[in-house]
Length: 392
Image (tube, rainbow, N blue to C red):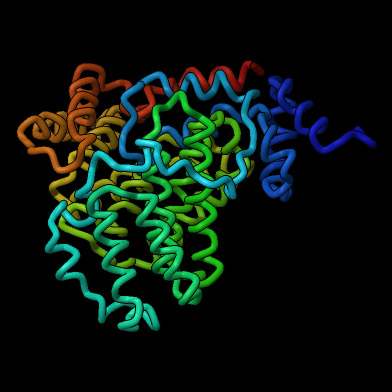
């Protein structure tokens, strides 16, 4: 190994599918700084598929119409490449305009008119920035996400010390990435990179910015489903830390009755700890393992904060089924089925609600798939466990 390039060392890990390689490379990622090695960031596809593949399929994404997206991403893992975040976007691209203009403001001009400009943190409330804020918020309301992000970036240039504008910029870029079809990996990855970059810059300004933690977590998850699930294996510890810290800070930001930072963090946490395997050795390897009880607790909190969210309720149903079947608890299973059936009568709050309602029907028909449910498909957790123990 001595004398090999960083890319050669990372490429060698791709072929390691035996148990011994699984342990060696898992420990390497857990205790090294390879995430920040550009070559390894592009090619780090070592044998931690059962962990990475289970983490990142469902997070706080606005839905994926293609249920095979996760499997397709895994098949593409060796084709992944780093995407520069400095490339100028093509403003004529239709993906830069959201089909869900009411995501933060309910689609109403009153959301911009009644926005609490005076309550913005620090110098962001300066009247000289009021025009930029109005433009940015109105463009975001109308789904013109890139133009909105550009206004926010101009505000950052004027007031670089407040993390609030950074996470709003990160959210816009994440939504642009989500608007691209799943097969346009370069375009999607480019904007997820921008989202992570801006969220990370916000955390550098304010290490206690919970919204920055949320959007960095979500961006990292989507980078993995876009470029190959294995690329997230080295990020598991950081993603867990982002969730735990964000939830612990109990952020109060709220756009409307169905969209708030705390609810989104609980939802992300529920998915993360449900889909993550509970294998006893996993925490030793990567610093975190699954927790079905915590998943259910977080799902209940999310629904309590935003009862109108169909995706939160589907996650609650999945968590109830997962834990109930695991513990042979018929009462929890019955509650999970009841929660899932109830979403049939809910109106659509988000544009992705019809997709989530369809997922609810699948879970009702196949409750044994609940632990591996994600918007990118269903993961056979038990099968993956057997594969790891068998060495490939």
